[in-house]
Each structure stands twice: as structure tokens, then as C-alpha cells.
Length: 230
Image (cartoon, rainbow, N blue to C red; front, top):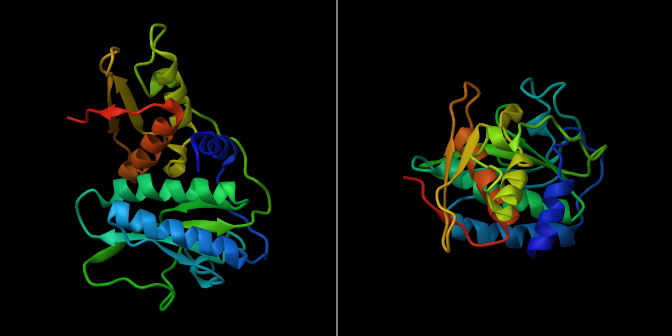
């Protein structure tokens, strides 16, 4: 996907929890699996696509929250380190690809059940979360968002690319719509640096959210970003 397509997917993507009974065509499954292989290698992850498997979203954990989900990405990898951050950064790339292919998605932290035999989880690996996938009963809706000033140090003298990058980050999905991240422009010269951090949340998942938001930030900036996360 080029940057124009990614920006379009960011604008159109909304979290969807209800899906219709429509199988994902094999050619689209093949495209998704090809990208999963790339992302697993780049991100040192073990993402897996599960199709035509409704049990994960029919248990007591998901009752009344999700409807009609029978496809999902299992976001897994080796325990420890920055697993949750990488899951967010690389998983959102799958979400945007799925959006471009006419599919709907929703990041899911707790309201699902692990279905035996639906995926593999070798010793030393864990599931960070899953991403519901399929054809939505609707396309979701725009949710209330924080202001750019509340999640960054953007100001009247900030360059336009920084405004655009923060705006794209604010369109990133986050757990319970918490948007617990902050971007700070450290210098405005030939090679400006940006510091990104997650802020505290009782809901958790802030590192996953940060990974998602940083990807959106990079896409929105439409320029290379030199990260300074010291």
C-alpha cells in the first residue's frame, strides 16, 4: 500500500463489533497471509489468521459485545520485551490492509475465548490480543476524540507535517478509546526528532496503543521520523 492508500484507510477505518455471515474470499485470505508472513519476519511476531471459526466470540466473555465474528487475527509472540508495542505497530498495518480490501476490524483485548486447535502457540509465546475481522453489519462510527493539544506539544509555530501526524495518531484505535499517548516535537530543523510515550491508564494496553498511534503518526507525517524515546 502506498501512503495515499494508507491515509484513506485511516480515514475510513472504524471499530466494528457486529458482522454478517459472509466468508472472506480465498484471494483476500491469501493477500492477508502474505502480509502476515512479512510482518512476522519484520516484527519478530507469530501473527496467525483464523477463518470460519465462531467459537472464540460465542463464550461468556464476549456475549452481547461482539456478534457474528468468525474470523480474527491472533496477535502472538515470544513473552517479554516490547511484545505489546510490536503487536500494536505491526498489527495496525494488517488492520489498514484489511480496510483497503473492504473488510472491517476491531482490536480485542479481553472479550474472547481461546479455541483449542484454532491456532498454534509454542512454548514461550503468548497471545497479546486478537483482532476481529470480517464484513461488518455497518462500517462503525466516529468516536469522540481528544484534541491535538492534549496529546502533543503542537502549537501555532509547529510545522504542518506535525499537525498532520498528530491528527492521524488521533484516529488510531485505542483500548476503551483512551488515547493515552503523547507526542513531543523536540526540534524543528533539518532533522527534527519526536518523542513518543504512553501515559498511565488503569485500562492497560497502553504499549499496544502506542504502537498503533506511532504507525498512524508516521503515515500522517508523510516523511521519515527520527524517534527519540529516551
